[in-house]
Every structure is written in C-alpha cells, then in structure tokens.
Image (cartoon, rainbow, N blue to C red; front, side):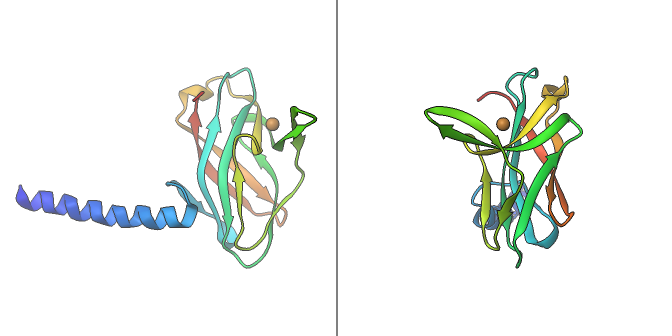
Amino acid sequence: MEKSIKTVRKIKTALGGLMILTTALSGMSAPVLAGQGGLILSDPILRVIIVSRPAAGYFSLENTGATTRVLVGAASPVCKKAMLHQSKMINGVIKMLPINELPIKPGARLEFAPGGYHVMCMHPEKDIKSKTSVPLTLKFRNGDTLTGDFTVKGAR
Ligand SMILES: [Cu+2]
C-alpha cells in the first residue's frame, strides 16, 4: 500500500513537471499539438451556443520555427464552411470581418479568442453538441495543414 502511494506521488510529480513545461510553452494548459515547422497549437475549442447558429473556433497558435507562417484558412468535416474572421468594433458596432491571410512571425503567438480572431464554423453538424471534440484543420499558405482536436463547448 505504502509503495503504491509513493508510486502515485512520483507520477504526480512527473506530471506536475510536464504541466509546468506545457504551461511555459503555451501560457495555458494542455492540450498542445505541434505541427510542421515549429507551429504549436494549444487550447483548441469550438464554442457551440445554438446549433442553428455558426459556431466559433478559438485557439492559440505559436510559431517556434525560423520563418513567418501565413494562416490562410480553415476547414472541418463538421462545418459546411469554415472561415477566418475578426470581430472589430466599428462606429460602436461589433462587426465580423473576413480574414484572407494572417502572418505569424517567428517567435510570435496568435490568439484566436472571443472579441477578436475566430474560426467561424457555418452550418455546424446537427449532432455537434453530442460530441466532446471535433477535428478542425488550419491551412497555411505553403500548403501545410495543422489539424487540432477542438473541444466542443456550449455557452459559458
Ligand atoms: Cu465570425
């Protein structure tokens, strides 16, 4: 019994170290997905408030590589169409602007978060709320793609 408790403690310590490393890398908690050329995707979520309305994809994307990467689009089998959008206050009204390309310089981190950049998932699949996570692919100008497992979340 005593031995198993010690083992558990050791595992917890090891996990704690891993969490600290993950936190240091992403500034947030796991999950973290590393893609081509040093791209690191963390905390991907898809916010689904009402299935009949578009869902919004949020994440953090860090470029640890040596070259600028350009995000040009998104796609998911659970969205009829997925687009890159930016919410912006224009004359006191929040508007959503389409984004065609979004460069991420070496060492930079791009935040897709409420009130700013988001992936707009048009006509999400009807049973989307029954899923815990869905695949969503980020597309880059050089042809690379990065597919994350986006956690499905409802209204806060
Ligand atoms: Cu939008």
